[in-house]
Figure 1 (spheres, rainbow, N blue to C red):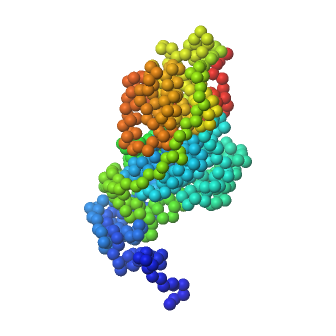
Figure 2 (cartoon, helix red, strand yellow):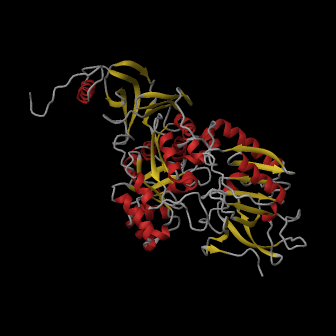
Figure 3 (cartoon, rainbow, N blue to C red):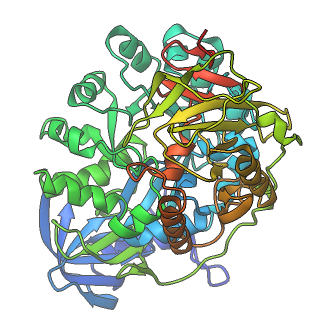
Amino acid sequence: MPHGIIKTHQIGGVMTEIERMTQFIDIAAGRKKAELVIKHAKIVDVFNHRIIEGSLAVAQGKIIGIGAYEGEHELDAHNSYIIPGLIDSHVHIESGMVSPEHFIRTVLPCGTTTIIADPHEISNVSGLAGIKYMLDATRNVPMNVYMMLPSCVPATEFEHSGARLDSDAIRSLIDEDRVLGLGEMMDYPGVVSGNEQIIKKLLVVSNNGKRIDGHSPMLEGKDLTAYAAAGISTDHECSTVDEMRDRLSRGMYVLIREGSAARNLSDLIRGVNEHNSRRCLFCTDDRQPEDILETGHINNHLRLAVSYGVDPITAVQMATINAAECYGLAKVGAIAPGFQADFLIVEDLETFTIKHVYVKGRLEASNGQMVRTFDEQSISSVSGTMHVKEFPIEALRLPLESDLARVIRITAHSLVTENVIRKVFRNEGGDFISHENLDLLKLVVVERHNSTGNIGIGIVENYHLKGGAVATTIAHDSHNIIAIGDNDEDIYCAISELIRIEGGITMCADGKVIDSLPLPIAGLMTNRTSEFVKVKLHEMHEKATKIFGINSDIDPFMTLSFMSLPVIPDLKLTDMGLFDVRKFGFTNISII
């Protein structure tokens, strides 16, 4: 017997590792039949940027090879294309507003077979318990789900979140197999200035040989160089081709985002060329159920990229092998011997209409529908997250020192707000009240994690609501309660309803609840289907327009959810008060 070869046998009907490998080699060499052979296919070779016509053989959940193979089961592709399973290189599952299991059921029929998720949102509510829930809920699903550990919990020191994750917390999970590294490092000023706590987090990850995602909008020059030098290898916040090129030249990968709120593909795709395309990936970041169900997921990126003139195979590379190489996923993202058998059968390389989706060689979705079900994780560890200190309606008063006030002006189709000064209406006691002739509404943020009793109050323009209030516990990034309305009674009603349903979205008028979408998973997600959420949100959007007259140029709920994010200019409101993002500090509402 040659040195190094060990003879083994089956034990109890289970193949040993050596026997599995021997069988795999026999199938690849054509001595045995494959489990599945798909014939008459046009197979996209992402390594050579070409199309191979032939048969694809699959066994043991892996690609055997391309060639004249025979299979126990054979399928005729009728000259359709086979491409690798698509990869979303950065996504917040929570933004889909459904549980991880329902999120997977929604995106897998769109051809996404691998996602790299950042559980930043649920971590800001439930801390490590939130991350562990996301890991457990995605452990036995027909998709490759990897995690990046949230880097900024809380996102800033100017609001109260439900948890605080330091370097020790990061260390406690960094060795998990499906944890690839550190999520988007939003505190780029802390990186550039060498903040000790930030550096500790970076070192925990880099010393373990894992990756660090970036988040550096508008960062340039030596500050950007310092950011990259700290080991940060990606960025999904580019909005211009120049920003994209700056990051590529510093050795970073650029994740081209097309989400529901931020859509950068049409601007950035002009900067993709044959020289830099292999450093460009696709991601959604945040994408809501309606968008996914109507236009798709990463398959939508493919369609858009090709429509803007990108070579179809280049687009496929960006959606597959580029992401796999960026994140060190050795055996996904390509159709080649030994790679995991994650692939799609599509009609063409223009519309990318998906016929079938395979994961590990098993048919999981066909013609837009899942073909099997799987179990769901208990939500008990991440429910019951509403811990609000009881307060009277009088706590919603906003006393002002003059008739001039600093106001948050909403900008249509943008997360950026304006910092404006307006003449406001006050009652006899000097409190701000909305007036029917003035488009000025009260905005309230109530801390809901630790019963601190914190309530921030401000004024908003250009929302156009009349006769009621809207409130939600989706309030980036700390996800406190945020409410907007033209009278305290309905604002109080909406806040009370959110506490009752354990988080979600609600609307109130005349002291009564008009409609609600409960989100019992950390106040961010439901364990109902994406189709249910789509229908419910559509109904609530119609009521927002017809009953309350809310500005039709904005999404009434998504816009509200970003009014508390103190890292996007100009003016935002947290539970601690009115925040001037340009000056990076709190500011007074009253103008004296």
